[in-house]
Length: 51
Image 1: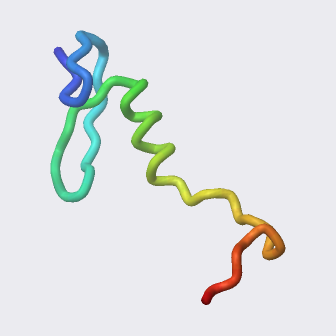
Image 2: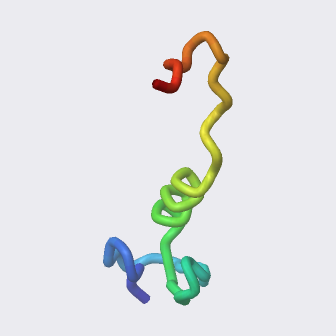
């Protein structure tokens, strides 16, 4: 079966993303999980002040 994101013929896993069902390979699942994870907290001194 082919991944619905990249098209590679591989073992796939079902994921619900934004209300839609997808069958994705491990690489695409890892990429999606990286996008969904919150970024590491930045120290306050590294942030620019709001203007």
